[in-house]
Image (cartoon, rainbow, N blue to C red; front, side):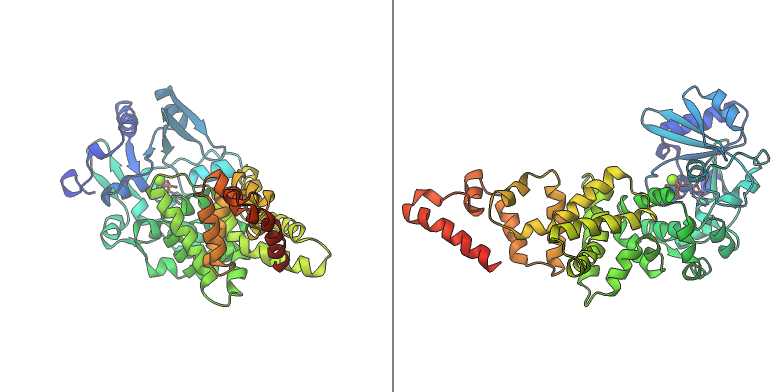
Amino acid sequence: MISRSEHCISRSNISKSALKVLYRLKEGGYQAFLVGGGVRDLLLGRHPKDFDIATDAHPEEVRSLFKNSRLIGRRFRLAHVRFGREIIEVATFRKSGTVGDDGEAEAQHTQRIVRDNEYGSIEEDIWRRDFTVNALYYNIADFSIWDFSTGMADIKDRTLRLIGEPERRYREDPVRMLRAARLAAKLNFSIHEDTAAPIPKLAGLIDGVPPARLFDEFLKIFQTGHALESYRRLSRHGLFGHLFPQTTRWLKTAPDDRRAGMIRQALENTDQRIVQNKPVTPMFLFAVFLWGAVSQRAAELGEREDCSEYQALMVAAGEVTAKQVTRIALPKRFSYPMREILQMQPRFLKQKGSRAMNLLEHKRFRAAYDLMLLRASAGELDQSIADWWTRVQTLSHDEQLVEFGLARSAGSPARKERAPRRRRSRQGKR
Ligand code: ATP
Ligand code: MG
């Protein structure tokens, strides 16, 4: 037990809502602890993303203390207490289960029914946590931290270490392997060697995780500001290929580092956007990850079957996406526009005519253009074409008409006559 004077957590850094819940539980005669990533982040001087609370109150008891709460989950019931947009999750201490113990994810993605013997004491609760640094309990009764493992020492050493026997803990819930890579990236921690050792051997267990849960995890890995570092760690531990097998295959056949560079650049851009508070969408990263596999498949189809470039790309995008969503359940509202972005790529090669100019007005132009820029940096298309598309966006409408060969510049009669011929000869070359 680490007393109030021996640690740096101050109530002023805990959200008002979380404090309200902690105090009301305490006043109701229950134990109430802040737990998990919230405590860890406060000890590291970071702003926690969310605050989770653990208590000995049963879910129904929590429900009756808070009008603004509802119970979720079938297998393990949790209370969500809502304050405006903020949700405080309150979980009852429970014994470590036999399989995947991540309360909310399990609750959302499995259909198994609640067993009755699930509740336990705080000493039992720690065994269902993953890493020692996530198993620190901040007690609202006296502001002490309860550390049942080596959490405080591991925070100081910036080390992620699984509680218990690593191989067993990964078999219970393979998502813990992804969490190790993600949290190490996010916190700039190292993964303890005993915790890292079984990962390459067990990485294949990721294939059995429900795709909907992997989509949730995808968002946490790639859309929260540490995508590039997470990708590096996932790749190093042999995990990335289980999330995006087709991408990995495409990277393996790369003649040089430029394909990998394209992926890294996209991830870096995504991280930058988060820093700048700009919106990010999974549709774009999926397009970047899948582009290579789609274009390879389209080339195969184009050779074998008598179909146009556009048809080949459409079929290939359909096939590759269908395979990918069996791994990570990308909702249709993202997968449809993602396919559009892929299918728009050949249109950037045509710089003349009204169809080419219409591309600028396309709903997905910006995302498709961003992907095209990345492709140019990977040497897939000429940098001068990418630069041209960058430049035409800055022009006035009239100037654009000229660029796209749809108007004669400044009314010169001589040019008027030459313009169509020039257009024809350029098309001929292509
Ligand atoms: P983040 O900063 O991304 O929120 P976190 O560690 O808080 O990281 P959450 O998903 O919010 O992650 O989970 C809250 C807590 O629940 C964790 O700190 C950990 O104690 C526990 N937990 C979450 N997922 C798992 C899991 N798969 N296995 C065991 N414990 C888990
Ligand atoms: Mg959290």
